Amino acid sequence: MTKHMAALTACLVAGTFPAAPHRERASSVSTALTPASIAFDHGGGEGSNWDVKAAAAYLDKRQGWWMEWPRAQRDHQTFCVSCHTAVPYALSRFSLRAPLGEHDPSPNERKLLDNVVRRVRLWREVAPFYSDAERGPHKTAESRGTESVLNALILASRDAQGGQLSSDARTAFDNMWAEQQIRGDNRGAWLWLRFNNEPWEANDSDFYGATLAAVAIGAAPADYRATPEVRKRTRLLAEYLQRESARQTILNRVALLWAAAKLPGLMERASQEAIVAELLSRQQPDGGWSLPSLVGDWKRADGTPQEQKSDGYSTGIIVFALEQAGSSGHRDALRRGIAWLTANQDKSAGSWPAYSLNKNEEHHISPATALFMRDAATSYAVLALSAYADTSF
Image 1 (tube, rainbow, N blue to C red):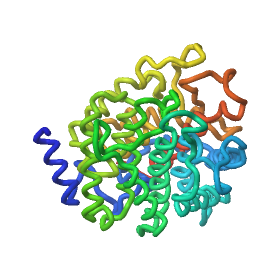
Image 2 (cartoon, rainbow, N blue to C red; image 1 turned 90 degrees about the vertical axis):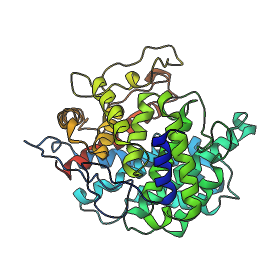
Image 3 (cartoon, rainbow, N blue to C red; image 1 turned 45 degrees about the vertical axis):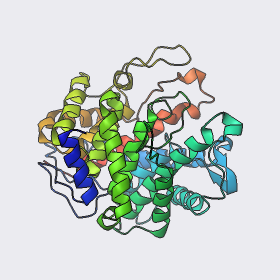
Image 4 (cartoon, rainbow, N blue to C red; image 1 turned 60 degrees about the vertical axis):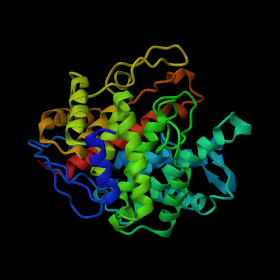
C-alpha cells in the first residue's frame, strides 16, 4: 500500500475526511442528489434555455413504459430496476420538482420508490432479477450484487433530502454490505451483471458499480458512515477503487470523480485533477463529448460503426461530475458543455440524443428499447443543468 493510500484509508477508517480544496460543504449531510455546492457565474444565461416541463414529461413517460414492459416484470409483482432508465430517473427526477412547482414525487417516481422498498423488504423471498437457470452461470449472484447497490443508492439518495436514513434504507445497506466481496482480486467490490454490454453490463462494470456504492455511502448521514462496521466496509471499497482505478476506461473514472465528490477522502485532489485534465482533452469542438471516445476500442455486437458525434449521455454525466468536482480551473469547459446540452435538447420530445455502444437502432428489440441510452442521457442532462442553474463560481 502506498503512503498516500494508507493515509486515505486511515481517514476512511476513522470516519474523518479532509475537505476538498476550493469547495465548501453545504451541510454535514452529503447527498447524491443535492446540486453541488460550487457556484457558477452564468454570464449571459447559459443553461437557462431548456424545457424543464418537456424533460419531466419525457422521463415520466419512459419510466411509466419501463414499469409496464412485460420483459421488465419480476417476482412478487415487482419490476427490474434498470441502469439505463430506472436508476437515472430516480436520481434526477426530484430536481425538476421545484421548477415545476411540485411538492411531492411524481406518480411514476413514487411507484419506482415503492417498488424498491418492496424488494428490499422481501429481499430473502423475492427472486433475483436474473437467475443461473434462466440466463447462465453467475447471474443469480451478479443480480444480487447489482441490485443491492442500486437499492441502497436510490433509497439513501431519497432520504438525503431530509437528512435522516430510513429503516428501509438501512436494510438496503445491510443487504449491500452482505453482498460485498471480502476476499480475492475483487475484494471491496460487488459482483455485477455481465451481458457484454457497455457501459453498465460489461466485464469492467464491477468498477462502475463500486463507484455507485461509494455515492450511496456518501449520501448517508455522517453518523451512519461513522459506525465501525460501515467504516470497515468502506475501507475495503476505497482500497478497491484506488487499486483498480488506473486500469479503468475514462468513462469509469468519470463515475469515480463523482464518487470522490460525495465521499471525501476517497481520492487525493491531484488524482481528481488528472481525471479532469483527461476529460478536458476529450471535449469536442462543439463543447460536447462522444461516448465511444471514453471506452477504448469497444465494438458494437451488430458490427455497425460507433457514432462519433457528441451525445447527451457522455456530455451530461461528465458535466455533472465536473460540477461535483468543484475546481474553478475548468469553468470554460463547463460552460461549453452546458451550452451543448442547452442547444441539443429535442424540445418536442424533451429528451437528449444518445447512441448505444452495442447496437444501432435498427438492431434493437423495438423502437422503445432503442431509447434506453436516450433515457440515461436525459436524466444526466437534467442533473447537470439543474446543478448549473442553482450554483455559481
